[in-house]
Image (cartoon, rainbow, N blue to C red; front, side):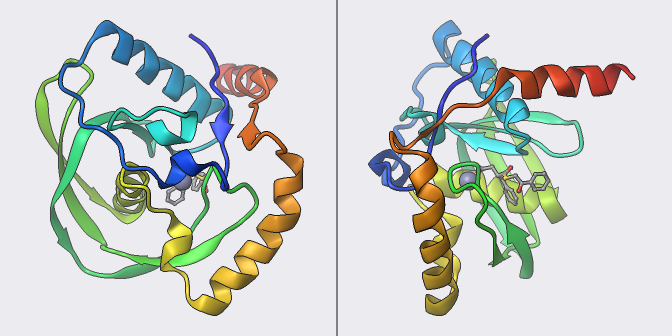
Length: 184
Ligand code: K1U
Ligand code: ZN
């Protein structure tokens, strides 16, 4: 498995919509494994293909130690409205309050290409919506008020200087540290 670089805000791929997957191949499964490894090392709870520079419609999610692969996900039911704080591995150090559905049902394919449904509430519902947005070129910033968005963008202009190539390289020691903590 390999750690992938995470593309950060300013890279046009984050605004692209992805292409539906027509077959779940071994190559796609390798990408999925690398995405999980990258997500864990970056201490995230989700990661979408565009964030690692890929255009396949696939994302990974792990809220509460339940890893989920969603290939070609679609929200089939959404209800309620809840505000909550979000971050994004592609916009480090920037946070904002976003209103999202409180409960969603998502239909998708798993890593074997089998159709399944997942129901999410609370953080899982938020994370599923955040990742599915990524697969359509949308970012949580798009939901902020003009003022909050302006303030987030001015903070980002300073943060962005850390990523001249618009890529974030994850330190593999972060993954090793997590394994050591789990072993204790
Ligand atoms: O897609 C991403 O950028 C990953 C993102 C997902 C996400 C976070 C918070 C709300 C909705 C979706 C992250 O994982 S950022 C890391 C983070 O903010 C977080 C990590 C652990 C628990 C809660 C939030
Ligand atoms: Zn994100």
